Length: 301
Image (cartoon, rainbow, N blue to C red):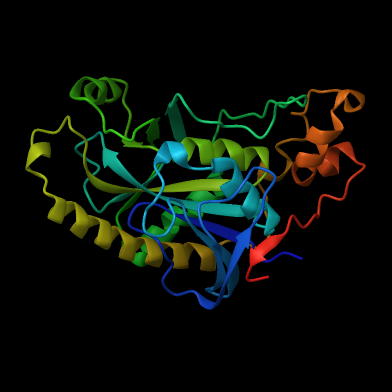
């Protein structure tokens, strides 16, 4: 049974989703370990949604400490077909100002220590990732920005860095010379993993400040950053509500069949243990296992 159709991942400053009704918490077990926090299930704009605080409530997890696989697999277990990922970012262009939103259509991966795939251990798959964002969802989000009265731009490139340190000026200026738009620490892994489990994915990059390239960067205070985070969180809730309300019931994109031609390993060569771990993801393609499996809930079941 589908418990949620739309997933919302909240980044820095967004640890809960305003407007959710009929809420309950569910802490899931996954074959890849524990997600960042319990999922908050509820109703938003008449749709069933699941909210997850990416860094845990209280912001306890570094970007590199995040169990991206568990977070995305948990969404799959709940029946989620689309994910809206909210992410605090630094701006690499003067035109992207603090409190503005960008809905990127490309990523550049500069991380070094992340696990970005569910596959391996005897089963190989290569998904197409030339267009890493579901543009159907991205366009709905962009329209949601308009209806919510939030400045939002559709299109641009999100650089994903390792962190937790911010960029050096040399790095920041290099990314600017490449034409990059915003920089963050989390979203490219989510996008890759969402594609592997055939979930539509789009990022809402919420500009907090200019990266260190900007001549006024050193004048930014903690108080100013917190004020922008709070404003972005309020705007994010409004944009998400509008986007969820307008999201089509049926998917017309190719995200739901991303694995159809991606699994390379011969069926008879697949290790049973790995196949079992991946059955929710590949069951409909390799057979022999019911993909609608319940991996268990620790609370709120």
